[in-house]
Image: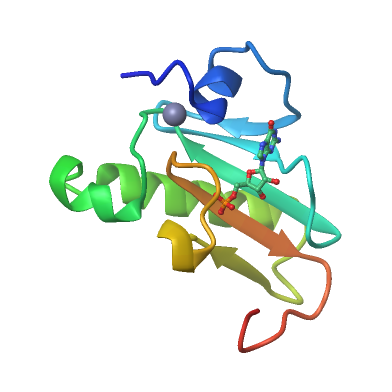
Amino acid sequence: MTDHACIFCRILKGEIPSRQILEDGVGVAIHDVNPQAPFHAIVIARRHVPDVASLIAVDGEGSIAGNLMKMAVKVAQEAGLSAKGYRLVINTGEFGGQTVDHLHIHVLGGRQMLWPPG
Ligand code: 5GP
Ligand code: ZN
């Protein structure tokens, strides 16, 4: 299940280079090309799921959601972010600020995050 126009599908196929951190059968974690914090990774679903809302239809057992979330936590732990804390973000749709329509979790850390977010 690949969208040939999708930048993350192209990264997953190796057509676009990325700095990989972790991978398993469900997801791949890479460094974000435009980091918004001292540490900024994205955990990308291997399957081309457009957004988190689509999981309701395609992820009945919750294994995609659960696996990606656990990988995001593992990435944060391995980056040494656990002691001070970090932020996981899933942007959804236009108002959510989503720019790539392929499910991914941001892992942001290394600085104080603000609330409310911009
Ligand atoms: P969104 O705005 O959809 O929540 O997040 C998309 C993220 O993907 C952005 O943080 C953006 O910097 C990142 N991104 C877009 N294109 C690429 C790319 O080609 N390589 C990597 N590593 N990250 C990308
Ligand atoms: Zn895709």
